[in-house]
Amino acid sequence: MRLDDEQRLNWLRLIRSDNVGPRTFRALIARFGTAAAALESLPELARKSGRPVRVASREEVERELAAARRFEVSFVALGEPDYPAALRAIDSAPPVIAVRGETAVLARPMVAIVGSRNASANGQTFAGRLARGLGEAGFVVVSGLARGIDAHAHAESLVTGTVAVLAGGHDKVYPAENEPLLQKIVGRGAAICEMPMGWTARGRDFPRRNRIVSGLALGTVVVEAARRSGSLITARFAMEQGREVFAVPGSPLDPRAEGPNDLIRQGASLCAGVDDVVTALAPLVEREPAQKSLFDADDLNDTGEPLWDEFDWPEVAPAPVAARAAYDPGLYDGGGRADDERGRFPAQMEEGARIVAGLLGASPVDVDELVRGSGLSVRVVHTALLDLELAGRIARHPGNRVSLLAS
Image (cartoon, rainbow, N blue to C red; front, side):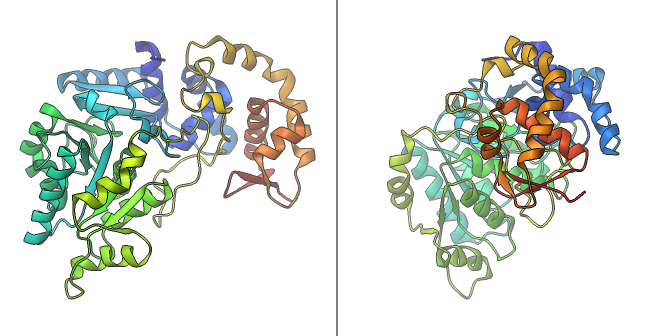
């Protein structure tokens, strides 16, 4: 499934609108079927929720597309063939990624190498050797283009393939000193980001970037990291995403070894060389990552602050199994089935909301149970929950559960 130019523009408009992050994007597509319909409905939904919203204009996105063309950047949507399969499998997968370089590299198995910006000489040497060895073993090395360990991992895997994940836009590289390295990376590998052209990275953008770094990879290796390092955020994302985590042990006298040593105590695999990583990941290389539906999102705001200022609209339960590996074309822009079903919503939704509300109580219940117990379609149940939440009648709980609020 590939979006046409108009559909891609609408997807970009939706994700570039204020307070729309990955979770809200999925909720809106689940509710309205197409990005175009969601854009039309955003102002009214925002009015009902009492929060104003700025909807990205067509002209704004057209300017971004023109700027992207100047940098030879293409936009790949969630569910399209060029979208990395491993990244598509995470709960907070970006709806659209901007790719510069060789998109073919995104289809190969990847390993993330991350670590301290203020890396030791030994740490830099180990990261370089590890990156070269992994490349020779057939893996693409992914990292965040930061100073220190990241930069050395990229530099030593240029020949075999490396992917840089940017925290800002493609035209706002951070740190600027790594711009020459980035030019080399996109020659044989790729650079990706989810932020708009012209976006300068801010503090919260780095954890966002980190969950993409770990999401692209089958495993993440932490070479050096202090206890409050951003590299440990990447490791935690990898754990939450069900990926392998490796840590390179170090001297207890070196603060840069505290993070990896702690990870090993917590159950991460010890990495003393390339073979440790290759052996552990070999069984996973041929295994297709378990895919999440476009309409399945868990709250990933465990970094101490939310990664996005999103509308608090519902998480969406998994689509039927058949839709998980390749998203249901009927739910994409241009799909007829979504439009047909959305046309029936006015007649169904009042009754659907009544039935769903009748099944709810003070104790949280799984949304899948509501679908089975109500006899309604997944789409109708989630639309009813959205309306009930906007009306302030239900509360959301971890694990895709909901409960009825006291009136």
